[in-house]
Length: 246
Image 1: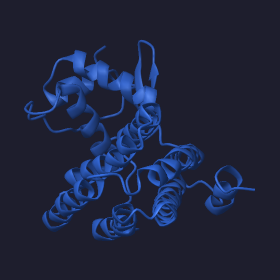
Image 2: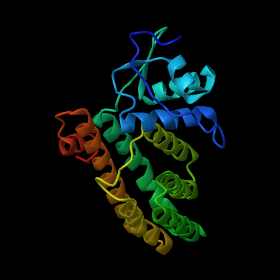
Image 3: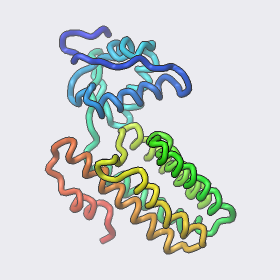
Image 4: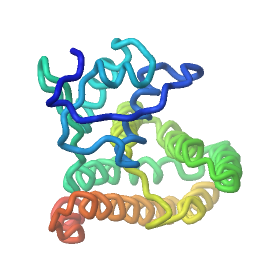
């Protein structure tokens, strides 16, 4: 529906409409707009409004809104529009609790797998190049690829699919550690002991390094979410209650 007086003002840039699907581009633009403050959580926006500003039809915008709603980034109000919502720190902690439960056994099983060390090293080199270029989008795509290689080598397709879905949810939510908390180079360095242990066939070392990396990432992201929302959440206590073993 066309925007009305109840819809908040909105200023977005037209999409390039090349490369990725239009729905993916809309998702990226909504995330960017939330990050820059062009879209404010809690305010009402219309599909028509977004489509007009991005210079696309309403179909990819509707598809994007459905995917964003499934991920929990927007709430759709029938015949009115949608509102941006931010993920609660608990959601982030729960996601990382599941990832730890699946990725620690996976990296133990994958440690020493034939050819895996070489493919992980190659991915690390690409990640280093992305760090040098300051290409955050490419870097986190390669980050996901590296974890996926490990899960594939472990041989549990269901675990691989679940982790992939969780990472997609985090990507759509727009939650990634940034230079305020941890640089891309530091994220890259956290993967080094994982890759070294896997290449050496050190299952225990690989699991310890993976636990340290995922725990650090999860705590940083949950803390960022708490600060962004002004939530008086004790993230460490939340993590201990949901993730840490009794």
